[in-house]
Image (cartoon, rainbow, N blue to C red; front, side, top):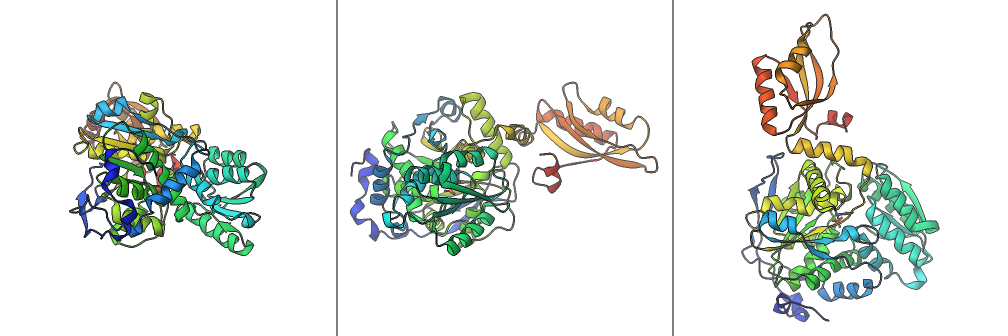
Length: 471
Ligand SMILES: Cc1ncc(COP(=O)(O)O)c(C=O)c1O
């Protein structure tokens, strides 16, 4: 096995299995994100952090390296690029691993190929089943077409059309698509049942060692390609946890000094909750906006691995993800999907710790529907305090609306939405008002003015049910 870089030599890989688990306890630190004071980051006590954790739980390096060799001629070797903008902004060496440039526009091809190629030839007449939020589906469809195996893929009904169409075009006549349920988890249950009754072969999106090995090849490439002595921090997105489990397994054994940070959407914190409660939990409801990583229940194997190696699970509000997406596009010309922006979104929270350090962020995918851009922009502006939706209680008398518009709005404030019906037999009535401001302080001025005029209001939050009417 050829492994580069100084850091790699620090561990005798052949003897890995006998390392002890460092003592671990779950503590809490306050999250720095503004939208969610109720949620905190989970921190694992890392007294023994530089020592390998429970190695027996990790995927052996030899297996990830075998997957890497197997995948060499199948996947694109995506670049690990230094981002000048992010490096300058954070005063660090910030690298981005560009899996947005992967063949199916996400890293998912890696795991799918590594799994499907492991199916014995005499079993390949059986139909492959899987469930996916859209990216694993593309990986499976691509490989099934390559290997001429039939597959039936279940996806949620709200799968972005770009993903649905891509699955069809990669899988050609070998793929059949079933749209079932509102979330990945519902599609998953339906696909599992059908697979059992049809005696199919199941290719799980994340809870499978072969899948995890394949995703782990990202780490092999990062450590081979990076132009620094060591990687101090590795940030990656977490959905079911397969990608993080593969990357962590490799890093923890080959570059044990690297601090590993998993990043989840705030609206679907399944791994966060699992680590907090020290067992897998099924969330009742989730926000599916970050569709690639919106999962109600983490994978068992990924949980075992991430629970033993992660320094921290960071939750990122959906609006923050949107701001990162907008910035990446405007400043670097990189178009990513929401899950693809998670890892970079976490950098703000670590800005003090990463100063002067070498940091790698995985951009995991770029299957973004341009049709979602209006929502992405709106959520980003709300997150930045530049756009608001609120119920405003107007006095039901002639001139009340005019008074609001003339006296409360500043010269550069804009009304983006106004739904108002004048009622005759009431003293006050609510109107739905959307406003955009140039800077957050302008909204403060607007609020002060409303208070002065005794116009009460209630600001709507993007996680409220009523907000769905606006998106
Ligand atoms: C683009 C993208 N990023 C991140 C994830 C999360 O990966 P995992 O489920 O392996 O944690 C996914 C999963 O589908 C994805 O498609």
